[in-house]
Amino acid sequence: MQEITRPPSLSTIATDKLRQAIIEGSFKLGESLSENELAERLSISKTPVRHALAQMKVEGLVEVRPQKGTYVFSLDSVDLPKFAEHRIVLEQAALDLAIKRNLKPLIKKLEEISSKMPKARESKSFREFLALDVEYHNAFFTFCENEYLLDSYSMITAKHRAISAYLGENIVKKDKALQEHYQLLEHLKSNTPTAAIALLATHIQHCTNTKVDS
Image (tube, rainbow, N blue to C red):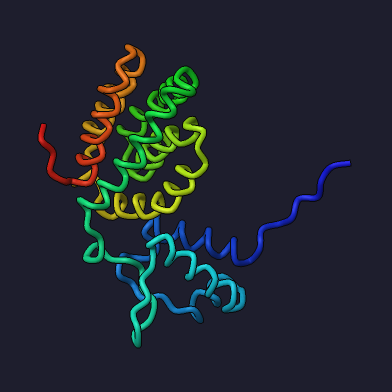
């Protein structure tokens, strides 16, 4: 007898749809969000919408301004260098553990993702390229075997995607990002993990347009 799978709650569905809408730019950064309008658009009551907005606040995707309302986060509220530092700390730790615990499957997964990126680079869909970039970085957490690191990273992934989608190709240079992905992969194959971990920091700084020493 198979276990009965429970369908996702309305709050979970609303959260997923709202998160995706912000990531994809359906709601612009700084845009006002109305519980009534969201409930109407999703054809649900305001209660699951309210729960969704509360979760989006935890993830940093929305801001609640007293006496004014709820808004999609704006870049004015994001310290990009510190946000990059946050990503670097988490991703370097995950990559280090993934190398020590699952190097071969990590390399295989990164090769698989990287093989799809040239086609995405040539296409006009920046969103497709960005999705593969996110998948590449998520692989560190898939193979690090540390659910706490994974949970911590999942809390900022959506905000990272929304920022990258908003800044677009003026900041996230596809050629440079792809080149650095290949370089990191080569470091892993040649058994130079220290170089790979160091390159990861430079790569993240490049992709957030923060100052790098190189």
